[in-house]
Length: 181
Image (cartoon, rainbow, N blue to C red; front, side):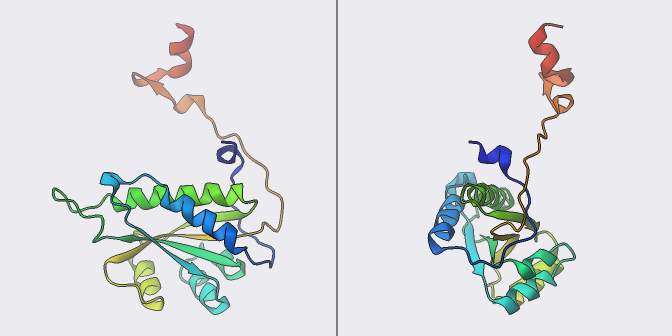
């Protein structure tokens, strides 16, 4: 799966809309994510209206690129759907994180670029977004993804760091364990 190794955060986009077939495949990738107890608590809100994108850009000091993106996807958790008999159902953060990553990988596969913007647990950001887009109280925006055709080519980066891999016990390097040292 080469998209894992080529995906980068893309923050500038061409003024070209994303085709519906690509959007559908991107959303399908989000729906394929694993989830705790298979609750699948995700809901996705697509935003392409220029005024709405501008408003989202103003909701976070790190969201400026949303204003120029042709599309944003709000990845939201239905906290009612994620409840378990034995807990408060707080697994939805992990579930939505997995869905967000799947979406980002499919964005790369489609020849597009995107960037993950954190929304939850910043409750002020959650409140402002929820009010603007009329989200019910049990729907929580967890992440925002700005996406579109990249304005500039992006190069992959090798982020592997063997010093951060431990084997069996903390401080035992996986590299050392393989060499018999």
